[in-house]
Amino acid sequence: MTATAHEHLLLHFTSNGLFAPGGRELLVIERGEGPYVYDTSGRRLLDAMSGIACTQLGHGDPYAAELAEAAREQMAKLAFNTVWSMAHPAAIELSDVLAGLAPEGIDKVFFTSGGADSVEAAWKLVRQYHVMNGEPQRTKAIARRSAYHGVTLGALSFTGIPAFKEPFGRPAVPTRHVSPTNAFRSDESEGELCQRLLDEVEEVILAEGPETVAMLIAEPVQNGGGCFTPPAGYWPGLREIADRHGLLLVADEVISGMGRIGEWFAVAKYGATPDLITIAKGLTSAYAPMGAVMVSERVAAPFYEEGRTLLHGITFAGHPLCAAIALKNLEIFRRDGILEGVRARAPYLHAALERLRELAIVGDVRGDGFFWAIELVKDEQDGRFEPDEVAFLVKRHLPAAFLERGLIARADDRGDPVVQIAPPLICEEPVLDEIVATIGAVLEETGKRMLTGATSGSVSG
Image 1 (cartoon, rainbow, N blue to C red):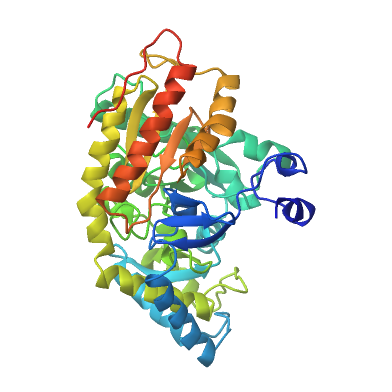
Image 2 (image 1 turned 180 degrees about the horizontal axis):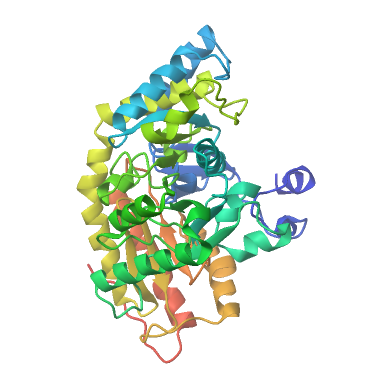
């Protein structure tokens, strides 16, 4: 299949030439079973990334049958209808369910087709809100460095990864980027770190002119750079700054929402209610492409005034089949205690990952719920790898080493090199043990190969 794929299929975020005839064999997944997937040669792989942090219920039955039946029933009644000046029952019901799960005051739902669509729609809602309120000069955004918010041209403005942006010219939205909530290599206390980060946000707003800033967007747990969690007080601080300067606060929960952190919406865990929340991935457990922007009553109010028109729409947003699958997905979450399971097992996963610190190549372990990163270092003084070493680690060595041992994990270099996992939310302790043991074995071997002036340890327990 590699030859056919190379001839016709443009792979996303991929050096497509690597899979030319005579090059690498393309991994082709053809079926799944719980937390495992199988390639076309029959090899079983433990999917520690839930696809791309989205297959919350795993792959295949028992849940696939229920979700497929929900789609079949909907298709028999109505296969397609828009939510442009009309609606259908599945979209209405799903909006009601989501509003009931959201933080208090977030009670309107704008459906999209996925994560980048949600971020793009959030910006347009924010922008039109300010125009309708007589502040058309609010044209700027604030986001965080190394954060990923999507690569459509609007969302790309907020993404804080220069390599993704440079080929496409000036950003569509003028955006300033501030520091992520990275505590590694910092001697500050949690309170000092939080205050420094909030002071930086304040300084940027003042430098740009508070009256020109429309929104501040951030992930509760930042994916890019490796699962940065916020210090205590950070989100309440962002809320206070946004209120004081009249800008809107957007929580990008495309990854962290819908159970990944053990909550419907992770931002609630960190002590603040934003004005808008973007979701996607886990909304359907990736059994269908769907996203949404959750909107506060205050932000939605101008769109209901006489003579106002919401100037954004997506053909497949709120698609009946996707909505039916999302409804069944959320029903399963509640019925089978999926979020409660994540909250119960997250401390176990955290403790297992912490034991990897015994390896000299492991500098930091961070994350929350079922979303974790392991930052790799060059020596026991937490030295950084050279760029060519990083490229070797994350592009060549680690992905192949994990696959050889039957594991799908993510090696990433948007910042310092990290290994990330986001297991399906159905994983129990033996599967989590398998994930951590495999990562430990690979990193132990990698440490012996890569470290200079250090002795790599071994993982016990």
